[in-house]
Image 1: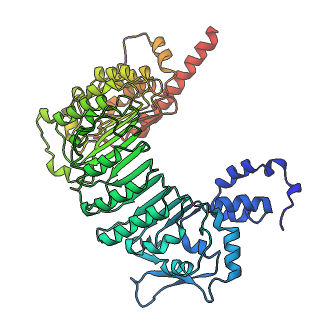
Image 2: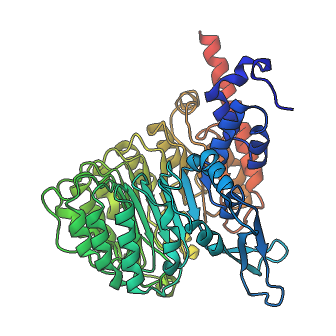
Image 3: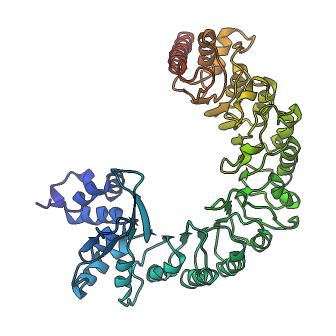
Amino acid sequence: MLARIHDMHPLLQIIELLHLIFGHLDKEDQAVCAQVCKNWSEIALDILWHTVDNLPAFANLLAPVKRDVDENNEKAPVSYSFEPPGPTAKSWARFEAKYCSRVRVLGLDVDAEQKDNKDEEDEVHEDVSPLLQTIQRFRFASPLLPKLHTFGWNSQISKFVESIMFMHEGVKVCCIEHENDDLDLRDIEHLFEVIYTRMPALTSIKIGLFPSQSIVVPLLSLLEHLTHLTDITMPAFTDVSKLLSLLGNSKRLRRLKLCYYFSKDDLAVTLTGNPYEGRSFAALESLWMYCIRYQSLLPFGRCRSLANLHSLSLFSINLEKPEGVRDLFHTIPTFAPNLVDLKVMYSCRSDIEDDLEDDPLLDDIVSFTDFRAVLACRKITRFVLNHPYPVNVTDSDLEEIASAWSHLRFIEISVDPAVPSLTSRTRKPTIRGVYMLARCCPNLQVARLLLDTTTTVLTAEPDSKLATLCCATYLRNLHVGNSLMQREQVYPFAMALAQVCSPWFELLDWVGDNPRTYAKEREMKARILALERENEVLKANRESS
C-alpha cells in the first residue's frame, strides 16, 4: 500500500536527505522506494535512471523486451528486441513523459562481451542493435533524452549511426571507444562529422581508438569545430605535432591525455613538434602522456605560459638512462613551476624487460642527483618516480626532499623495480629517512619506498622529544615493496616504525626474502606500540596541563 506523505517522519520528507539515502542503495532497493509514494517515486526514479548502461532494461520501460538465443550456434550473439507488437503510441507517450527526461548519462555497448558466471572463459556476446533500430524508426520533435549530458559508445564504428538519435546540443561529454584496429577512414570521418554537428557544445571528449596515424587529419577537423573543449583524451599517436600545434592555441583546454589504447606496445608519442613558446597551452592544468621516451616532453621546455599546469604524468615505453631522467627533471621546473602532482613512470605494457640486465653498470642506475632539480617545484604534494631498476636514495636525500616539499602527501620512489635482485646493491633510506619525512611533512599519508631495515635508530634526540614530534603524524600507509628483512630485525624495526606512523597505519607489500610470513606480526606489533606511545603522550600532556 502506498504511504501517505503526512504519515511520514519529517526527516523522510526532506528532499536533499532522501537524495543522499537513495543514492547509497542498490537498484533493486531504489525500485522499491519508487513505489512508496509520489514524492519518493520522483526522487528514486531520478537516481535509478540517472545513468543508463543497460539498454535492454531501459527499453523494457517502453515495451517488453525479449532475449533471443541461437541454440544451434553457441558463438552467435544474444540478441535483444521488442516483443510483438512492439511500442505503441500510448507506451511512447508514457515513456517520454515519465522516464526520458531523467537520464543524464548514457553508455551504449552495442556488441557487449560478458563472462558466463559458470565459466569465465566463455564469452557471451550481446547485440542490442534491433532495439536501437526499432527506436530509430520513430521521429521526435525534441531530443529523446533531453537532459542527457554524457554520452558513451563502445562498439563498431560502422554502427555508430544507430546512436545519432540520442545526440543533441545539450550533451557536454562524449566518449567513443573501439578496441580493434580495423578502422575504416570513411567511417571515422563520418563519425567525427556527426559528433561536431550533433553535439557542438561538447566540453569533454574521449577518443579511444587504435592510434593509426591516418585518423589524425579527421581528428584535427573535429577538434577545430569543437571550440568549447576543456578536457581531451585521445590515443598516443606517433606524431602529435599537428594536434599539439592546434591545441596550443586553445584558451579553454585544461586537461590533455595522450593515452595507450588497444595498440602495439611500440606505438607511443614520438614527435611532438617544435619547441612551444609564447602563450601556448595557457589554460592547461593537467597533462598525461604515453611516450616513447621522456625527451618527447622537452619541446615544452621553452613554453613560459604553463603556470597553471598542476598535474603531469609521463609513461615511457623504453628503458631510460640516468641522463635522460636528468634532462627531464631539469626541464620540468622551467615550464611547470607550480606543479602539485608529478608522476614519471615506465610502461609495464611494453617489452622493456627485454632490455634489462641482471647486473647493469652503476652508471645505469638512477640516483637522487638525477631528479634533484625538480625540488624547485615547491608546491608538490604527490611525487611518483618508477624505474625498472632500483633508484639510489639515502636518508639525507629524503631529508632534502622533506625540506623542499613541506606539503607532501604521497611519495613513491621505485618501490617495486623490475629487477629486484639489484636492491641489495643500491643505496636505500632507513626508517630514519621515513621519520624525517613524517616530521617535516606533517600531511604525509602514504610513503612507498625501498628501505634498509638493518638500521632502526631514528635520531639522537631525547625519547620524550621524539614522541612529541611524532605523535601528530598522518602517515597511514607505508609500502615497502622488495625491501629485505631478517627475522631478528622484526622487533627493532617495529619499535622504530611505531614512532613514525599514526596508530592506524598499514604496513603493505612486503615481498622480500620472507614474504608475508612476518608482515602481519610486524604490523600488529607496530600498531600496538604506536597506540601505546600515543597514549603515553596524551597522558603526559594531561598531567602537564
